[in-house]
Image (tube, rainbow, N blue to C red; front, side, top):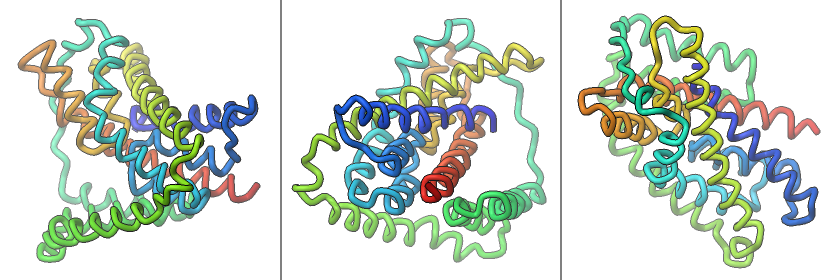
Length: 274
């Protein structure tokens, strides 16, 4: 959870970056637009679309394109940052085997998570609600047919309609603007800061942890699931061919999904209130 939370630092740093560009008169961004751009750093396409639709619908197309483009470029963006911030010795750290999670815990997790979010941050409930619902359907094991449909047929249909609806927003006179270049630039900066923050948090945790954490899994806090976790595993294997980090990295990866949705809820609550 800490690694997933640390990787969201890129979101808020990018909001400040967008406001800085506006302050110096380089590119005009309002606070709602800056908040919508910042969520690109969460590497969560649906969250980026949801938040930009609420705060800056005029930038929805550009933000969606930037978010999904950089999610696809995670294998190119992250490795240089990960190697720069870690030593060969740190990349070879082998983590202890994860404990077995009981079925009861798997079922209680989405239920408790949704209840806490709905009570403490209702604005994030629509985002995390769908995540928890899908997780509960899969783990409960009592709606196999519905779970199979959601994982295969339905997700493909939704993806097609999502692409069509976002594409319809990419009108030339709105997309081909200086703001779009600013969004693309801020987006890659957000990814870089989020990756670096996750790695540095893992190194900080090693200072007070008995069981050492491989800092490479910190970059998986960027919630591009499961691409970020695969990148952590790949970079780890380059240093030690027997060091498999994939399942260890999936923890921060899922925590990043939760963290980005909560960050979106926080910005939605406070930006709309201003």
